Length: 391
Image (cartoon, rainbow, N blue to C red):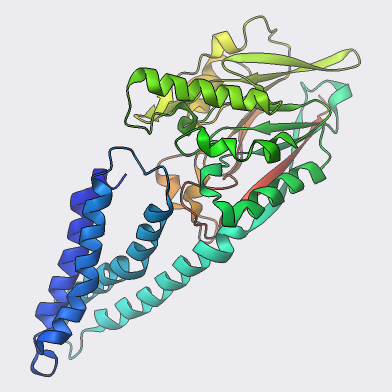
C-alpha cells in the first residue's frame, strides 16, 4: 500500500517542510538552528516511518496497528503541512498578481487545517464507532405474493481484521443489531477480511450467532481472495479455501456463481450469488451470470448478490433480468459531505438505491473498513422490505 505511493508521500512530507523553512523560518527572528531542527524533526521521523512501511512486501502488514498509527500521523502532521503550504503558495501568487498587502492564502490554509483536524479526529473516533440501521423499501410486480413484506437484512464490507481486541465491541454491536431486526433472511455482500483468513478466525463465534429463518447467504469480496498478499498462487489459493471453509463453518451459505431457491408455500424466489466481478487489478473479474442463474426461469424473481456494483451495468443488466441486486465495495469512500462522496468520480452507483426501469441495485456503504475512519458515512445495517407491486 505505502510502496505504491512512496514517491508521492515523500514529496508530500518534504516539500511543505522545505517551503515553510525557506519562506518563514529563515527570517531573522526565527532563524535559530534549534527552531528549524524542531520544525524538520516530525518530517524526518515520518520519512523514516514511510521507508520502513514501504519495504513490507504485502499490501499491508499482518498487524495493521503500525500502519493505522502511521496513517493517523500522516493525517495529523503531514496533510496539514501540505494543505497550508499549497494555500500559501496560491495566496502568494495572488498577492503579487493583485498587488495585495497580505497573503490571505495563509489564513485560508490555517482555517482548512483546523477543519481537516476536526474531520480526522471525529472520523477516527466517533465516526468509526457509529452504526445505523437503514430501512429500504423495494417494490416489484414480479415478486410472488407470498413474499410481499419479506424482510432482508444486508450487511457488507465488515473487514473484521480492523476490529482489534479493543474494538471487538463494535462487531458485537453490529451482530446484535442485525439479529434484532428479526428478518426473514440475512445477506452479506463481501469483504469479510482485510487480507488473511486468520483475521476471521477469532470472530467465528460472534459471526456464527447470526440467524434468520431462511438463513445467512454470502458472496466473496475482492479482499476475500487473498490477492492483497505478496505470495505464490498456491498460498493465495489456500488462503481463499480457508475463507470459504470459515464461512461455511459459521453456517453461512456462500454462493460462488450459484443460486438457491427460497420457498414460501407454493411461491419461491431465487437468491443468486456471483463471484466478485470488478475492474481493477485487486478486484478480480470472476463473475459468471450464466453459470450463476443456470436452470432458472426468466419468470423467476431474482435477488442477485454481487460485491462490486460496477458489475451491475457491465454484466447483470445486459445478461439477465435479476430484479434486485445487492452490492457493497465502495464504502462511500468512508467520507461524505452534504450527501456527496469523492467515490462518485469512480462509481455511478456508490451508495443507496438506484433504478433502471423496473430493476434496481442497492449499494451498501458497508459496516467497517480497512482503515478505522468514517466521516459522514456511518457503518450501516440495511433492512430491505420487499413489496409486491400491482401490475
